[in-house]
Figure: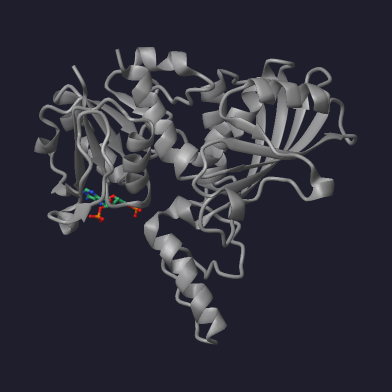
Length: 338
Ligand code: A2P
């Protein structure tokens, strides 16, 4: 039978994208339900239809523990505390929760899945499958084909993360700050500790005791879990930049054996969900401003790093809301289809 799908957080940045991706992949749903907080109950969200669910606005219902009766797949993006509160109700209703929050990612009984990297891990879920952090997804999609050429020793990554990672209010705020700046008005900052317009903020998520941020920690531990590679060293610095959608990442990778630029190109070209865009002399390289709304992870500026043995440098761009969140979660749901 065709599954009933609940989109949980349907009014949010990722929730809206869940609805678009369900349509784009024509997910074989028998019904799609839009759930959000009590604030949004009765609002309508546009939906173009998928499977047996006809196109037409969906009326948002308040998400409560009773919302999951008859639901088979619950796509969650309403924050970690909401996911924690509702996990039991979702699982008790017999649905599988595919959770975009950080609530359960490192739990031992919860698979953390990027379908291009570790699709086999969906097999051992106990009702919850976690969608990784967006910056981690971007990085592992690009690393996986290279790790098949030579084992990875260490990765140094710096991120250039868009406002979209902090949800709809943050995306609107950076636009409003830009207007305020150009009108010589003081910029109001609520989504972040400082105005993001005309700025870069080198702190994403909470600070940890060792001086790193939780976002940086996520990139370290999630990468090891997804790639089944506890030995890989990851050193991350995560920075918020005034871009609306699409995260950039600069990577320096050290391998156990040589990996040439050409071998990397060949591996990426043969791999799913990654596009090589690399002709810098002609000003061809991936850029956030040009790639919003696209699916793949784009790679460019590929070159050997002469300062280490077996080193490669490259630059990535990925739409954080699509492959970094909604698309990855819907791909996980596709893996669950009979
Ligand atoms: P609402 O719009 O009703 O607040 P974003 O990350 O873009 O800010 O989106 C967060 C999503 O999570 C929104 O759809 C929001 O709904 C939803 N949400 C937030 N808090 C709750 C809650 N307590 N119960 C259900 N949905 C929630």
